[in-house]
Image 1 (spheres, rainbow, N blue to C red):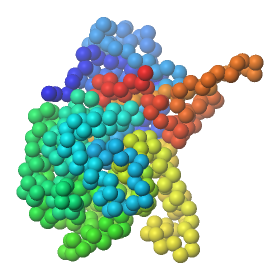
Image 2: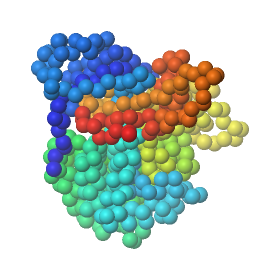
Image 3: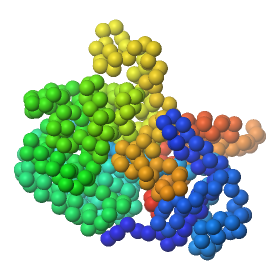
Image 4: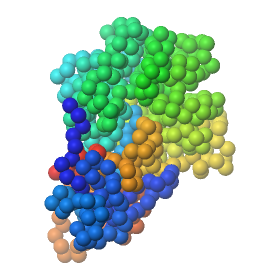
Length: 484
């Protein structure tokens, strides 16, 4: 099995919007983007007249008219880079929205471990994983960093399904030999390593160069792994240079657990650093309660952070200080953290990131001892707020950097691969008072009246949009979702 190739070159016409840097969106009106059969952008022509395509553009590219598929964005539609989910647990998808009154560690035992363990049944795993991939694609997620389970066959199935359904993915077999219920643990550190290698080899057999599907080393979080397992995973990273994903500083009780289990380490971040698991290819989910020293070390090592605002709120874990991390030079992307987070939508994560940042900007109550309250001088409170443009950057180009694909995806530059969504916004009909009132069409919650500037339309999409606005999704030039 190998990633599918496109049969034709493709021409896309209309409005293209993408982030060119943190806080700045570029609007390319009346533009043509040409994508070759490999799924790569080979030309971007602004102020383009479609009539001239056959006369000038196709000959320049060596294309023939009959060998080109054309997609035109309609009025109110625009092309936008695919979203990148930098942290999601595929086997937890059935539990989305279920966290009861639990905090992190209780929630793992009550909901998470039983669900993950049950996916040793491949028919059940196929049912869950297929819907998870379909659902995330429908929300415009073209790349996902997935945690699977400890089971090799189930994890391999997730990789197979991502490939067949066309989603770009990092698929990690979860390593946990130390902390968890007896029914859901790796037998030993050595068994954990053997099982991890088995999944790596399987993914290599279906996508030899990891063009679309890549393995990712996945120690669940430090307390879940023995010293032996962490040592062996660090050595495996040195051997393979595969990316790493794990959790860090999500919950206050978790910090106490780490301190008790790793007394020789200075802090949580130092645990990963000691075992060679803190590097340029490391994705750290949450990072809510990092100290100044830890954040500086993360920046020094070039590791990245997956910000999961929905999960952080749902499990009352805390408020991550994204601006603080960015100011320190730490790359940040967005994660849904399904099912700690209740929504599989990165657009929803973007709006949550904006709202959570507003909470940091609010003055603390008297006696508030939160770390974020203590560290924010009054003059800096406004700076912590994240704008629409900034959260969309985290959702696309920022996320691409976090997963190590900054050169391949996240924007509309020549040379990048066509991982893109076509977004459509609903126009409210212009009717006089005598016109019979019509049923509202199912075009989503974004109502456009026509007088809004495009910057305002994008803001309305961020705060009101959902999967109904996602009309088509492509990954590497292949159409992988179409709303009908």
